[in-house]
Length: 213
Image (cartoon, rainbow, N blue to C red; front, side, top):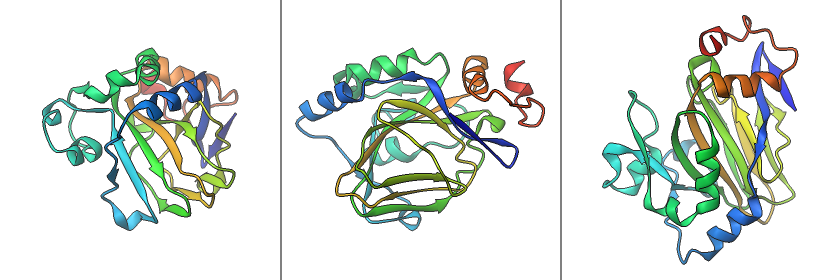
């Protein structure tokens, strides 16, 4: 399932899955997760926090805030953080992606909270970077919207989200929404994975020529 918005792919379900229950079981076995409140408090209401799983090489020994939120900037090497060794299901899933993975993190939106409409500049395949989401846990009344169109995510599914477009999330349930969020450079494998799910795609219109050769 995918959706074209304003001539580009707004979101697309990709042909890979993660065993969400196994991932949650691993998370629940950890005595404590080092969640950190999202630093951009102007773009959400309620409670939204993050656990970093991968970080820039230069931040491996730095404060977790830098590991969680230093996502932009020049090209650099990224490395797994020690916690990922304790989450073999998630680690194996990340390793199965045949594209250059940058950051990986768990993002938790607590009950009765919302991420306000915003955009993440140039985070889309048209600019050579993709943001991928895998829902792990959520309640009945959670909505993820891109340009006001609802993304019908289910547990364990891998989704490409064009976050260069305006997007928002609402959690009106009594349960926290937890997603695995991965940022990756776009290579031929990932571009084709997204393209193949968009059967009526026009390569020229979506500016994919430079990434699929």
